[in-house]
Length: 186
Image 1 (cartoon, helix red, strand yellow):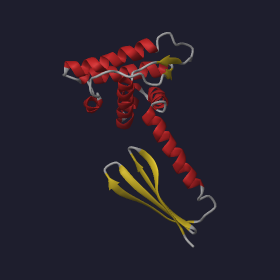
Image 2: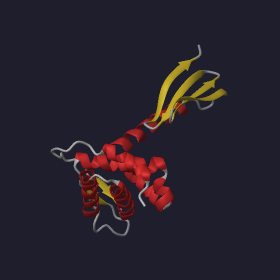
Image 3: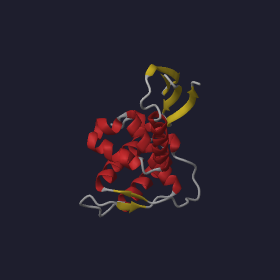
Image 4: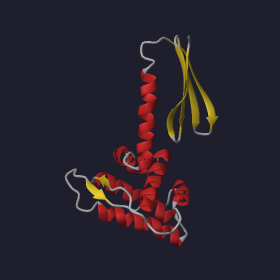
C-alpha cells in the first residue's frame, strides 16, 4: 500500500519542457537502492499516468546511472535539472516525514541523508547549519542567562539565547537554521 505522505511530492514534479543538464551526483549502492525504493513508492501512489511516468523516468535514470557500483564505490549519476529537483523533493519528503526510517530502517535513512546533502537544497541547508554553528561558537565562555524557544509558524521556531555579553536569535525551520539577529551589550 502506498504511503499517503508521498502524494505531497507530486506537486514538485515541475513543468514539462526542455530538460537541461544538471551537475552530476555520485551515489553508492546503498543510496541508489534506498532512493529507488522511495521513488517507486511515490510513483505507485500517483493516479495520474503522466505524473507517474515522470517519476518512473527518474527511477530509470537513478537505476541506470548507479548500475555497476559495488564494494562501496560511488558512481556518477547524470540527471537533468528537472530530475535533480524531483530527486531532491522526494529525498526531502521521505526524510522529513520519517518514512525512510520507518519503511527502510536507519541505514537507508542515513544513506538518503548523505545523498540529500549532495543536492543543491541539501548543500544550502548544510551551509546554513555551518554558519549558525559559527555564530553559536562566538558564545563560548559566556554565561548563559536565558534560553527560550518560541513558535513562529508551523514547523518554524526561534531560539533566543541571552548571555552576559550578547543576545542571539536563531530561527530553526524546514529551510534550515539561520541567525535572525545578534545584539551586543555595551
